[in-house]
Length: 104
Image (cartoon, rainbow, N blue to C red; front, top):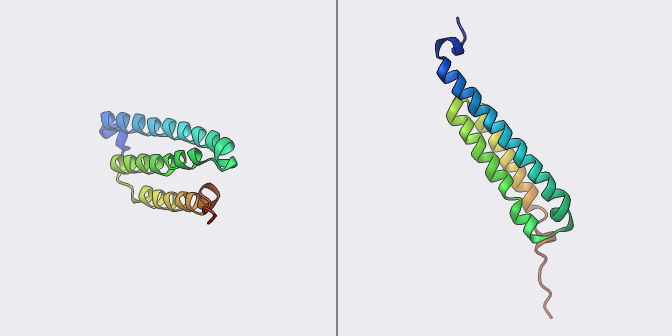
């Protein structure tokens, strides 16, 4: 059986470039997330909590894009796990960012 790249080289080139683009975007999103985490999120600033929502949304969109290109169900499993972990990481410290107002 011959590799898919020799049977359809245009598709193989397209898929390769799309996956490289997704990888570059992922690295950029990760660096952005680290900067936000090390600055405002660590201090409990509200803007950082709102900006941190870009991580699960961006990664979920990228994973769905990879799924559309490859059709691999494993991508959906990974996206689901990452989304659940990200949502827990954002919702568990909610009171640190939005403390209850005192009744004075």
